[in-house]
Image (tube, one colour):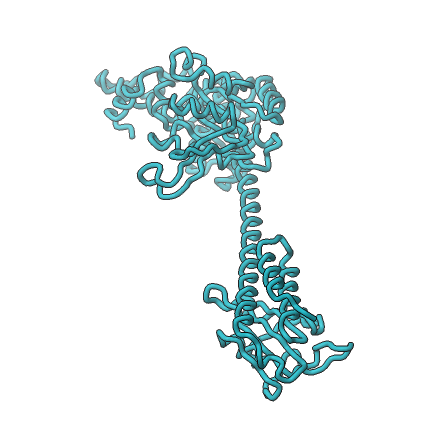
Length: 508
């Protein structure tokens, strides 16, 4: 039979870039070798991590071989092949036992090997396997073309490398997908639940359910601490993108000068320190959701670029002329009144209207009738687990006082206040949180008798005023996620003046 060696080599090379299963590629190599070389059998082994040679494809021997593993020290011929970088030939007079004696097939009979040739397979200096050829005729391999043997050996090693890399990539992809799903589930768990039964809260949940399954942009507004981020997570969890990531961006915390890169990415050399290409938040969110918190803090120049992404789904990395297309659902949140920001020229009107397709207002805690008691119970349940105090509870009279407060910091302030009170109670080995455990809440009719701002002894007016200013600024920062800009809005004053006043009073 005439064999087209060039065609066989081409077929093996082309298989390197096909999507054939690894078993098919292994067998294709062995079949090609059996056609080109004067052998009656061929086998391809892979060296595993335990040092065993595992057959992955055979020709001319019993397929029972595929269920075995060969330890080199027990098979001296295989061991010699592994120890040599050049092909090793064993003639008919070699006293070393052949691992394929008795398993070669011809005319439905098993007979012994008379001539054997073996090649070690290396990938980047590392031994990865062995290729063997066996013949029934004595001297079958006497006149082999060395270049031909080396060529097939190199192609076989390249195939092993290709398959190994593909398997590694698939395994890595499965791992990444598993980790991503785990992180998504953890994020949902950590974000907690939306708790409440008030009419205002029921309306909020209805609005979320109405728009969640669409791809409309959503603008979530409300005071600091009302749970706008939790609303965003619920919007994403109820959407058809729930199995994709939701990327969080705090627009108020974007570093000056790097904000555009953070959102849209950059290419290598775009600016000092850009040592490699980098994907931005929008690329990371492709297929999923991006949550732009504190959208009102975004600089005007970036507002224009954000508008393009919303309108056309296109972005450009910093330093690149190439346009990238993304499919991202946008949820934005703000505690500012963006209509007023637009009137004062601090926020683009066109961007506002693009984001405000379906506005969702998160009511402050003081407007949620009856929800303070429910939220207190929910928050306290988390503290019981956190502090290992299963019998911890709030005294009914203390709970009544909690329900009478304004909670300018909303749910965040309520949680912090309850946490401090719980710690005070546990410190004194008490499982009932009493009113005196709250260091920031007193009944309204006792303010003058208990407040340190109304001392019984004479004190300088300036000292008392500064004491009040310090406590007030600290309270505003606590209600504003430790952000000076938000605290200034809370106190309706200039941020620079507030910052200087705070530093003067020793607030860090």
